[in-house]
Amino acid sequence: MLKFALVALLPELVRPVTEHGVVGRAFARGLASLTCHDPRQHAADRHRTVDDRSYGGGPGMVLKYAPMAAAIREAMADLPPGSRRLVLAAHGRRFDQAQAAALAASPGVLLVAGRYEGLDERLVEAFELEPVSLGDYVLSGGELAAAVIIDGCVRLLPGALGDEASAMQDSFVAGLLDCPHYTRPERIEGREVPQVLLGGDHAAVRRWRLRASLARTLAWRPELLVDQVLDAEQRALLEEVRREADAAREGHGIQGPRRPAGEDDEQAD
Ligand SMILES: C[S@@+](CC[C@H](N)C(=O)[O-])C[C@H]1O[C@@H](n2cnc3c(N)ncnc32)[C@H](O)[C@@H]1O
Image (cartoon, rainbow, N blue to C red; front, side, top):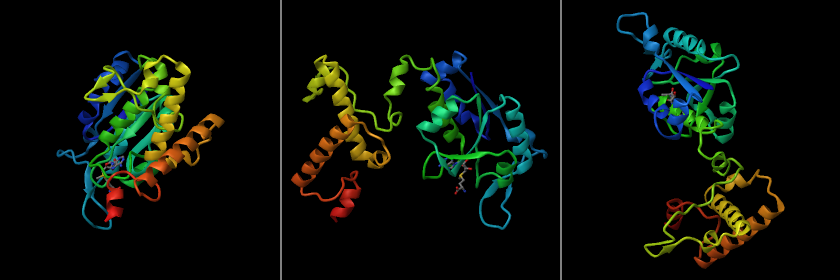
């Protein structure tokens, strides 16, 4: 069982992820558990104050050391030895699929969610918290980030997905984006499913999917290909895809690498 312990002011933003869908079923079947620890329960005053002004001045409040430390200690008591200790923070290491897999393989995960300007930095030192970020933007609190991390980890637990193989095909698992998928009907509003997917030739389907994965990665996340070690078949398919993309760009009179819509528009001005 993968145990999560959450320290947060608004755990009600996180609990729903443990109650619905594939991840909800994994929790219901005992593959994972979540305990929530509210720093307000550990505040010393009758107003249950957990924040205070920032030393040095400036706007914004900071989560106080004492109630947060007490909640973190309570949370850690619910976790087995060897558990990871994370603090959600915009400045942290970017959460990715490899980290989701590493956390899913750990015995437990402490998730400390900030609010306001964040928490007193001495908590990070005292509890050796690893800062983890969802991306280059600022959320109003760490709760939704904690929910995303729980979802990303729990779906990887053995037995969580109906078909274990489906997680292996997902984007980022093998360093590429997933290929496009189609379902019935074969034709709708004049749009057809690629013929190769209908023919039952498994080798041709595998090759089409690999090629489509490479094409999608090249179009949307070319940086993923930079450090990717490709085998001979992948290299040949990527070369084909590159040539096609170059030819399409030349056909449209576009120069340079393809960029997502919006960036191209700006360049055209
Ligand atoms: C308003 S934010 C604090 C932002 C902080 N002053 C900064 O500029 O980095 C409040 C809390 O939201 C969470 N948070 C904000 N952005 C995040 C992100 N990109 N990833 C993970 N957590 C985030 C953190 O827990 C943070 O303490």
